[in-house]
Length: 135
Image (cartoon, rainbow, N blue to C red; front, side, top):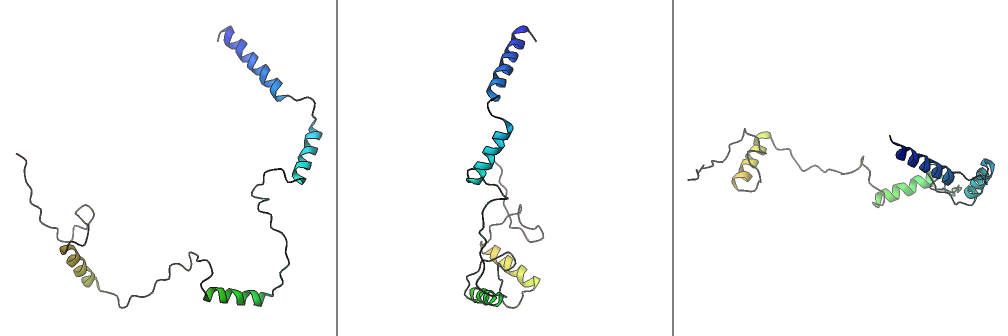
């Protein structure tokens, strides 16, 4: 490192020290300002303090709340959770493997499936493809 680099580094460190140092304010004064700002609600909130939920005494009994939940559920007004969604209704009798295979082959022959040998099991008959050679 040459002398120019050392001089520049020393100058930067000196400037940074002056910028950060504020000798007029003591630690106790900063702590007092922090307490005042917190009391005035001027500080950003965090997970521990947001949102502020006011303490409100309920005027309903547990039985009344449970009755409201039953009514809301019956009216479809409750949010749906992973445990209750989706409700899958039975579509009737289950088809056998042979029936499903026959339906798939029929749909494929009718051109209703967008499948090819890249994304369809090789165990099913593949359509014949004529290979042509470029001359």
